[in-house]
Image (cartoon, rainbow, N blue to C red; front, side, top):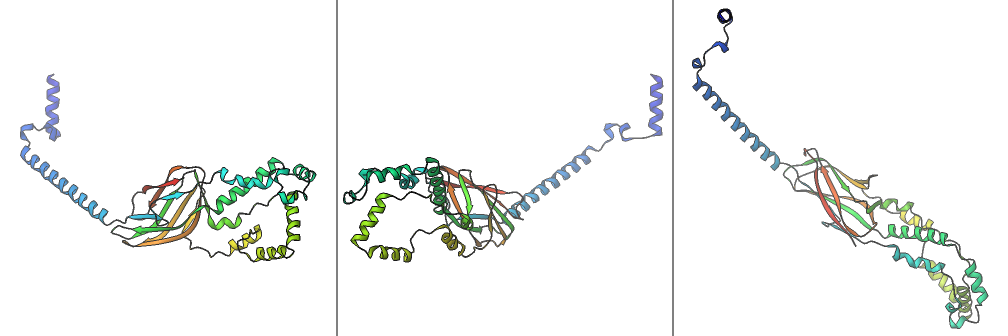
Length: 304
């Protein structure tokens, strides 16, 4: 033990260190004042940081999106039952279907021959399904415009807005409708009732058939074949590009910049084809150079 004390004493003299100083030699009041000063400086810096954050937020842009001049969307679902009428032209005939005034012009044998040459169920199903899909697309509700508004206090730059649609609503660019063909109706045997009616009408009014053909040619509402329909669609004026369809059933809108308190419209047509009824939501994601994080919210969609 004496050797330890002697060694420590020599070390104290050879290498004086703060640890060898007695506690009663420390100026506690000076240290306390320094700690209070540092705490006060820290408080002021926190307050300054909060103030800068508030000013920064007040000068941020605030991007809002409006679709078709409405806050939400309402779509009409067209079920398979709505297309059952397409099967009428493929139904079997009965002699009771012959009008009274044609009873002497149509025989049961002609009815039987017609029924025996009707299309098989698979061919009818294929045509009806294709025609139903075509009509769904043709008559689908459309997005025709996106109005982007900056309600904030600063200009927004490099704006990207993504609309993510639920899988229950299919998207298609309306410009792509020129790729949709009217399904060709399968060739059918000649309907003996229709044949007899034409002969009857021709005898009754020889000029009637000629007038009807001329009227059908001049009437703009007559049914067009696929080629004429394609020519009509291809004559559409192109829309201003600013929005496009993605592979994941979403739409992206891009704008270079938008001043505060101003709005701008992006015109682009998209067809919305609902697959079932229900209440759904479109997820909206907005990002610009001034945003540190993506701004997200949802727009309701009602399919009835």
